[in-house]
Amino acid sequence: MSAPTLAAPASPVREEALWFWEWSDGSHARSRELAEIHYTTWSELPGLLVASAPTTRGKRVLLEVHLGGRWVIEDASTTGPDGRALLRINPYCSHGDWCDGRTDYRIVVDGVQAPLRVQFTPRQSTP
Image 1 (cartoon, rainbow, N blue to C red):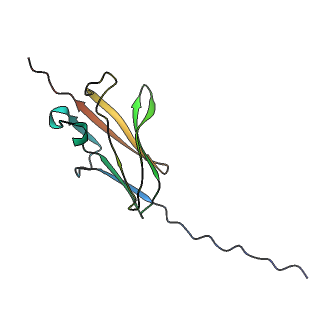
Image 2 (image 1 turned 180 degrees about the vertical axis):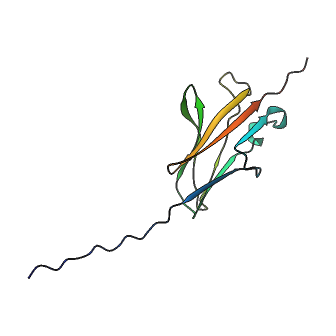
Image 3 (image 1 turned 90 degrees about the horizontal axis):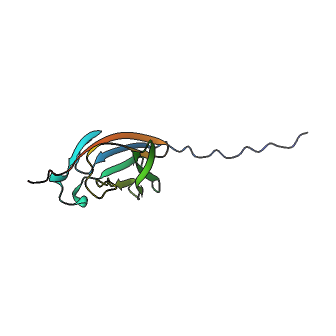
């Protein structure tokens, strides 16, 4: 007679999270203009709200910008108890002024990526 075989208890099946994002002003646009004339301070710019369903706490969420042929982290956050994280775009370029032109971004979380594009428009100087 052979020894009895024990089956390992089944692991609970984890439901895979679906990820969603929107601008903090309610927009769902993947491409938009951010003009300096409309935002007097960096903190007035809309942020990017990232959320999961079902709620997933403790996930690292990245906002990456495409610079010099590679992706660079511009902001990072971790999802809270509500499964949400807030990311902020930096409108200032290395020379210290508001950027001028199109910039490609992507949100990265849990192996999922979402591309977006921002057209930065600096304030026109007065004569």
